[in-house]
Length: 463
Image (cartoon, rainbow, N blue to C red):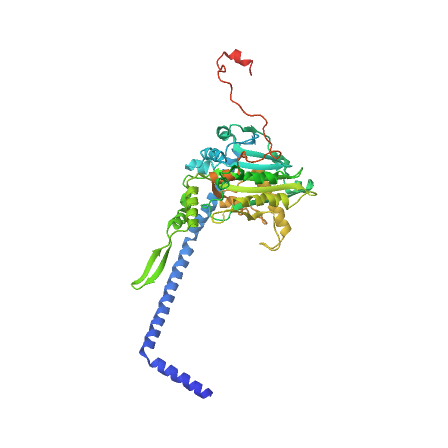
């Protein structure tokens, strides 16, 4: 039997190699292999010689990029050190008749204060970077307070914007509540306190908006809802001695921020087609947009019509060890952001790289307790200083630690409408008592006809 098999194989190859086509194919395959080998050998020789003689030039450009990144980091840090900030508290009256659209107008005024390096001197010598504002909703033992941190040079404009759109609100400079927080992980242990913290990011591209305040409104008065009330209910239940803070850092983005998402917008605008087989051949037919697709396109286009801010959102919970509850206050504040979820648009999710959670099941799978300690210290440091990650790669590298690299914090774009949905004075439909620290009296303008002229000595007695 084996002999028969060998005979069949021999006959097959004899017949196979008698054909001229086979020899032509083998010839072309052989030439192809030789050409490819010669080509790659030549290319390898060229690359080898290039790197042999050009490596000093390549090294120069690499070092130049590193030096530029490091130089910008140093100059930008010095620029930020020179800035002075003031913490303003919004004293909420018993009733605010303005909708969150008033806060949207305030944010638009804040956006007009945008600064950015436009010249070589401003960028490389002065180290100028955009100035960040901080909008903060904080519960100190169940008393909820609204804060806005601004640069001292921009304070008057921000105050004027609030008084223009919220005439009954009192904007008052206050001492920074951050002094209540431990300064470091060691001090936290000494004071026998524990903390939980995280940062939030968008689940999808920033072109897609979250569920905004107008989607919560209803013509029927009994069905009107203000999303800020969810935060007030949760923060108002924080026990005495504990602090829960929501920090929204914003910096005005360029006016052409939409250009980054032009390709996505064109994709949404392009109608879908299907191929249909007919007698004459295949034919492309346009498929009508579904109502849901149309609504998404409208929402994205409306989002593009608004000014945007670079945004970074942090949550912090600090409490004594004996009363620390990782569940209700922490998860409640985090869960309140789920009300802004629009399944076909956008939503928030925790940033896994910036949260006080580390175990053997997450990268790099070693020393979970040490990694957790570094994460807590990073979040505490960032919250206390209202810190924004450095602009440059070298800046992030220089501020990193072995067990926590400073590349996890992520900023994203959000329009004035989205931010106003997250942070605004409670509207009239919200029961603010007893949760919110508010003003009891109403601001009023001076009476008409009040004398405003007089000699200096006459006016002195009124000082």
